[in-house]
Image (cartoon, helix red, strand yellow):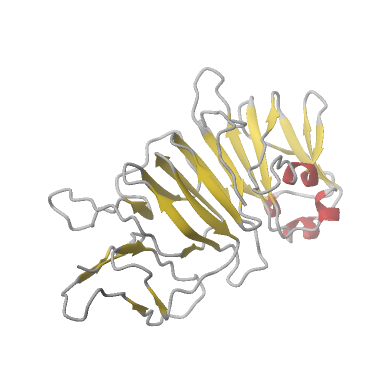
Length: 294
């Protein structure tokens, strides 16, 4: 599946972003007003919620637009990928449903609010990690938010990234959660390429042409990238324990599942020759693992 993200369906500067779990809304026809300044865009990810249930939840705007959450979930104009087309809200809006409070509490999806400023432009896109897909990111500066509401995988809400292809003059940073107006704080990314070792005192960075297959256990994460690259992403878990690196110079990432007991994780590192010395290292606490072999 191929996809080139160049259609700026969501060209917006986010100034008051919100990520709301659907289970936090009230049912029984209560009006759950969205606390955001219009105009704003709405995105819904609800992979594991029943279609009949979602069809009974409504987003109603002051100018009388009515969208069910099933309609919002399915605003995906591309066949091979799940880029979500935003639903624009020009006035105030609220969420309401005739479902019981208990039925609403069992929902697992989420709604993302992106406030739009028409006078400024930021290349911004939202991808629903609801199926395997290949993303071809153009040679631009962009921000892409990934939403994963898949509760069928074990562990739940895991995204696996593989088949990485990146040019040496590009860079990419992964961050937990959703983007905000403020610049990211220094070294808050959870993975990057090029890699900057945490203890480097000379601001050394190392670009890796090879990136190992890895998983992220996050319901929401985003990337900021500069330059073109591509990778596959799928709503599944990949266990790196017992695997081998597929290149002698490579980098990767490991995130321990939340409810998994502590254990030893072993990765066999590829070597050019048993007679050649090499070096391995890791950045710990939400920093990438990297492997080098000389």
